[in-house]
Length: 406
Image 1 (cartoon, helix red, strand yellow):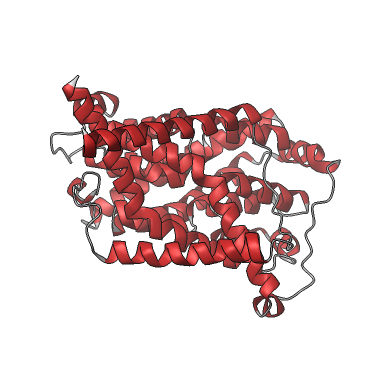
Image 2 (cartoon, helix red, strand yellow):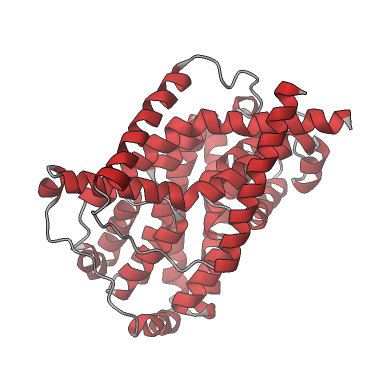
């Protein structure tokens, strides 16, 4: 019993430490994302993405880069672009970029994993897009694409008012109130995923022995960094399976990725895990609702094949350049999470900024309306995630009480 209480306390403390380390990064990332989404108009996006395939892929990647990292927001935007004339390949480029190439994800990765993983995330996303483009050209699924467009044909128009230029919006209090509301929406979209993901990371760090990871990911652990091709391939395949079982978004999965890397999983396997936010069942179901099950499964297989290729290229390229990261750099068990350093002051500053933004958007200018289309979520799955998150808070509170008072 004493051992369990000690592990419980350690798990809760690790989770809160993880979140404290990442708090300012979340806030900064979502502030930047909110600014871009409110002030940058997308009025001409559909036309420019549909005219030329190469140009469409480039623009789809760019527009994805400046969008929100929320998978449900990305799915809705991708559907809208595809419906209004963007090519299938440029829509896929947008979807991949908006979930992997975004600023806030890179900031969180820098906190837990280091610069090699930031490079891996951004270069890997480009590789995912290029490989997907190549595979689409080779397979040429014209009938699937036509049927997917037919499934969207009868949907209502979802245009948003973009009559004002960003110059006018940025000078108005109403524009900044919309930024504040978008910032609140960003947190509303991710709080459950982040809570569950960070809590699972703390539990795994405290309770799960290294032998489990050595069984799940072949030949990992014990300081081993020399993997055969087939061992790396197994890590890449198991990574998305692990992500599928967690069913949480990439922002919540980063501490888990750091944990896997710290336990000795290969660089390729960890990158595959990070890339897997589009492989969870809710995403599969939403794509089926939009385009039909055949297209949804085609997208899943397409992205999985691209993920395998991108992860292998990344691993062997980094190995060739002698820049493969060392597992010791993963920040998963640091007893001094709450020391007075730059993290402390950044967190205080961004908590103050967040408080002001929430006051402006939800109290001072609560009359301002700001809506963003989201993909239809499963009420059952959302309720499961919501109550799981609430259970996590009870778990964390109990663990912290045990650590500091018992």
